[in-house]
Image (cartoon, rainbow, N blue to C red; front, side, top):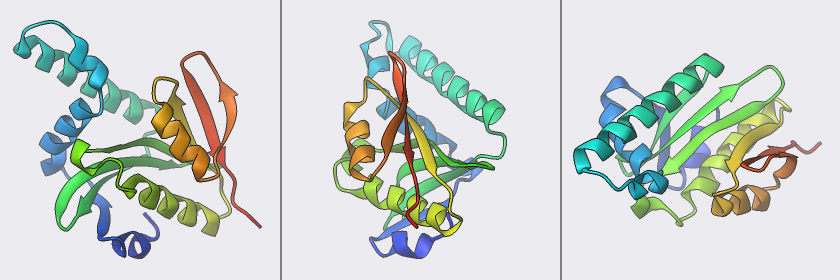
Length: 165
């Protein structure tokens, strides 16, 4: 991210992800997908489904946004979350933002998103994201940060924040 100093002020560091982060990212994905826990099957089968869904997300993001940047969010040297963004020609897209259960509800997402907004403000570029309708908590956070609903489908909303000035 362009302004890591502001994020570091809250004790957070947003750093590029590395190949060695794969186990953490897989575990984070599983914790961020409670719907997959509803699968009534053996643990081994559940792990296969989670791994498959994680791979689908990663490949889909790579296919649709080949220039996306992937970060790990750390608090005091411990990985607590992940962020994927794409700085496109006309907007900054927040593709993925997730935190481990113990780090949720502590304002870390707000801090990270404000860092993205600050970077976008510097280049006078809007920030966009898609929020699933099954995630009203995330929607509420984006709206509180000044995002507005620009498109709506039965399953998701596209939210956009425009820089001031």
